[in-house]
Amino acid sequence: MAQLHFPPEFLWGSATSSYQIEGAWDENGKGESIWDRFTHTPGKIEDGSTGDVACDHYHRWADDVAMMSRLGLQAYRFSISWPRILPDGRGRVNQAGLDFYSRLVDGLLEANIVPFVTLYHWDLPQALQDEGGWPMRSTGEAFVDYADVVSRALGDRVKNWITHNEPWCIGFLSHQIGEHAPGHQDWQEALRASHHVLLSHGWAVPVIRANSLDAEVGITLNYTYATPASSSPADMAAARWFDGYFNRWFTDPVYGRHYPADMVADFTAAGHLPNGLDFVQSGDMEIIAAPTDFLGVNYYTRAVLRDESPDNGTQTVFTDLEQTEMGWEIYPEGLYRLLCRLYFDYEAPKLYITENGASYSDGPDADGKVRDHRRTEYMRQHFIAAYRAIQAGAPVKGYFVWSLMDNFEWAKGYLQRFGMVWVDFETQQRIPKESMHWVSRVIAENAVSWE
Ligand code: IFM
Image (cartoon, rainbow, N blue to C red; front, side, top):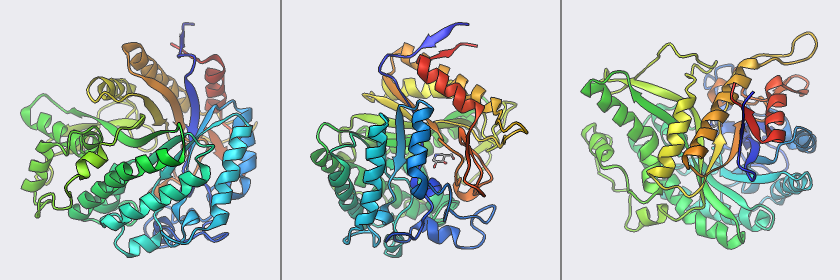
């Protein structure tokens, strides 16, 4: 069977985030986050669940690190809970919170696992939300103080930093669509929030560099490959719109291209920018374009677009491609094309796939094994897509599978399982799935089989 070999230094890892796995939502001085508030509000989460306990990783982190080590993972991407460090969002530091992450980092390094730290994966301190949250510029300023505190404490040992995870979700999914905390539906809030997230990224880059010598700093953006349902001009325009809204609105400013002019025109025409870009102050776009060392890429699926809606001109249609249990089409070709685009068009100096994975609910059979062959096949196809992008010249340096273990999937609660490790949420037992054993072999061989 033909083996496709990855470059010798290629880094294989898995990813998680604080709210999705930690639990201990109000322990040891942690403040309330917007996700604590959101999940404690009836009707927001499909199965009525919360992340109060989740995978109880806050108490079980040492076992989880030992498990990662046994499974051969070389890198681990996790996020820091802002309100665990700064319970009021700014000012008073909760030393117990810093100590928790410091022990985790030490544990990873002892196990020879490279830590990749994401500073913000959505659990904003509720105290800052009470002041208006991301639509306020002051939240961006508070983020920089938080980044300073964390990078001072961990910067001697952590050398890979991601400022934000998925600004599209922070801006639009949370403030325009309203599916994520704080659950608002307001275009203007969404556009302001997006800007302040990007601005705070640009502000934080030099601060992190100053506190963590020789560190590499980047941001993680999420991408959906946009394609028209037909070659009609209307469908092509719908795909352009979706690509602008989802992908270019964030990638363009990070790479010094300002906000895309076609989207500014579309948002203005739709009445989403009644005061223009009044939230963009002089110098902001240069700050957002601060040079970074890498771009984190989260990729799961594609969108096929048809022009049917007078609102935003787009509608996603489904084709006959197989879907994961999230209802997301499996389209590995999109990962290949995206990685090539980010290198050849945007000239990103280095790319890490910081998330890619699939939701399938396969659980333990009578013999205790979890035969999640569909996940293995999903991963195999996407590993091959990354390999092809590397062959084409894209500087892809590592791959973090989402996720290490089943966890709290935001508005879906525990109904969707993305883990390579099964979690029994009653007993907290962990069982590595067949896909995890397969990934361990890929890591050991640094190669994936073609078929
Ligand atoms: O679980 C999420 C993660 O927190 C962010 N990216 C997408 C994943 C799957 O929905």
